[in-house]
Length: 457
Image (tube, rainbow, N blue to C red; front, side, top):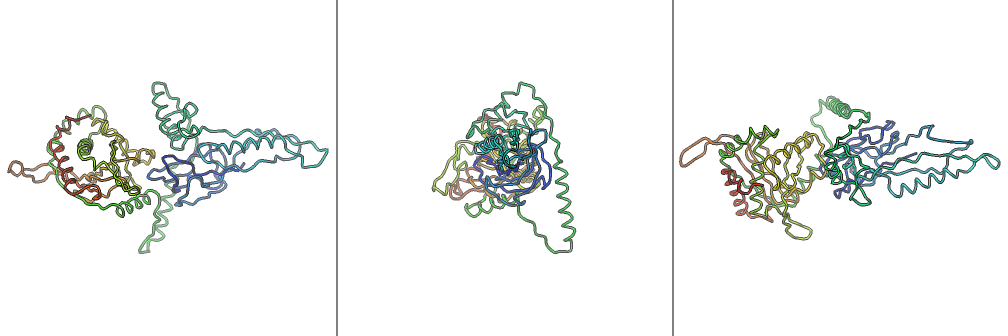
């Protein structure tokens, strides 16, 4: 039976995606739930699994092409074994129509088609004329999967959650990531049965093959003075967001320096205990805590300008975006409700999000919803910059490299560790004076980090 695999609804309001890389080719045999294509949605890279076991007959979309939800991605021929059919007489099976599948499950329309197929199979007519024996065929009913988004399916596999035991809260009972997380929390005390991996062609070897092809193309074009590279995937999304930001937001940047002597001393004192608990404690959690306190005092920095309704939207939740460099470009994972976390909890989240961001395994919901963003370019060097605001936010704070610099302390020249900060704000929402007051609050909290303890949560 022919199955047309459509781009599914990936949730989170996503209406389109870009095909980044095909993991299969026409003629390839695929297993049920084998990853067959990688698509870029917003900032997340999502691998879509095959809805059936079968053979790829055609790829309907080229790499680099952006398509809408429910567009046919590829065509599959479902495997049918001879021992699955009980056929009498000499005539063939009639009435079986093509089937369109939008992952992750068969739709109600598809189920109606399936019922009509079974009805046709039970009443197949004789094409050899009167007097011949009627042909009857019994076809095994296709396996109906649980309604779940691809992201939820992948999360379920990683956490060892059986979809059949999960109650979906989405439309028509569709299982979402929140449902998987809730089910995983409920079964934490129970032992998780190991899953047997489906033998598939290693993705790493495919990537190495792709890199090899690129290297050969570069070598062939060695004498040329330039090379043209298509803008695809994450780089395309970054380009779109940056252009949107500078074209729609009037941005101004202020730069200051912080005497980080007390901050360095506090981190040094807390590091042994953090290491004992298996946590890598950087300066970032302290800066996050200082920024959250400043956001409480100056709510305009935790706001956005709604151009459609010409309104200022002030957020009362604090979701911190942490800009993270990956081999494919910049991602901004989000720490949700960061004001409710301790220093060690923030440090754990920063480490987890950074590692998964570089591995491109973050879920879509972990890359959305930030209300303020930090970008730590100081980790690779540099002091000041002009960070570009993430669209939908009012400001972004850039962190430079902490280095020993000359500093005047009580009219005496001293050598102190200095932290450079660069704050870019939306001038429609924030004036220059308020921007400096916001920075002065951060300076006070970082130069006297013990004050953070007064409102620590």
